[in-house]
Image (cartoon, rainbow, N blue to C red; front, top):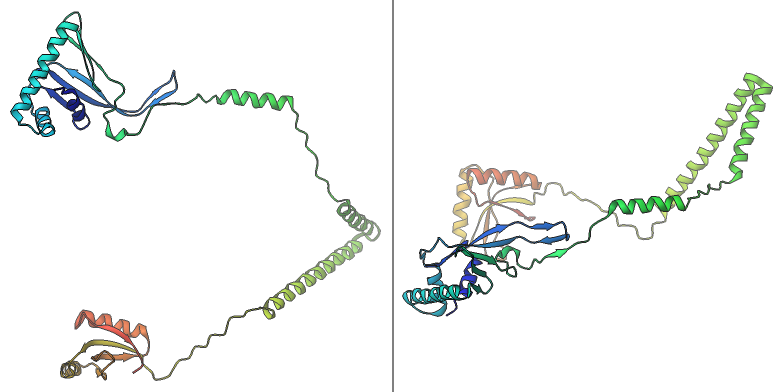
Amino acid sequence: MKIDQYISQLLYRYQCVTVPGFGAFLTEIQSAQLHEGSHSFYPPKKLVSFNSYLKNNDGLLANHIAQAEKMSYEIAVTVIQNEVNAWKNKLQEYGSISLKNIGELTLNAEKSLVFIPADQINYLTTSFGLSTFASPNVKREEYKQEIETLEEKVPIAFTPEKRSSNNFLKYAAIFVLGAGLLGAGGFFGNQYYQKQIQQETIAVQTKVQKQVEQKIQEATFFISNPLPAVTLTVSEGKMPYHVVAGAFLQEENATKMYDELIKLGYHAQKIRQNKHGLYPVIYGSFASYSEAQTEMERIKKSHNPEAWVLIEEL
């Protein structure tokens, strides 16, 4: 029986797989690697090595073979011993043996075992689906030089923005007018000029204000689908919020609860039978929900943790 397939299966899950009487295959996790010469990236993997001094049977391989082949543990140990003897005979005769998906074992000049692991299998389960890939080198400096060369060969011409000459003439006319006034009238000419500017500014502001008011009026009076007005009606004297002590199927039980609450000083009420056939008993009624909520919290802490708020006009 070939046992190398079972060794390979155990290498996915265990760090050390011992072959009794032969040696142990060890695994060590190696992080992702970059080979700068070929610009290749290698995913994390388990490196497999071999130690010929670890030969004691730890039961791992034998138990795995026994379960997989549905045989006893003793028979599995015998199978391993037979396979190990075959490996040793092959090493003596051919000088090497090859274990599928694990690697190759050879005898060197000193008759010591040399292990060369297989590269096609990655026993690190967290790297499943990851493969080696190569990325071209990014040559940023060369690109920069190419751009600088292009900029030297192709000059960039800036076209000035065309501006309307009317604005220039307008401001020039104002400037000439102001200069003439100042030259002719001195201080009084300057005052007249400032007054004219102020009047024009006020006129412009007034015109703009009228336009804004017109837009507001149009937005106010020409709404196509106005929302209906909401009218809030508060009924005086009504108290539609009630803190309920309980609802009883038997009226006598409701009466007992009512009498108990009256003795405790509550403004209790026993309400008529509702559509569910129950007789509710309340601690009291309130005009707002906040008042009822506050009273319910107080009652829950002091008297009845099952109290709740009923919203209904009684």
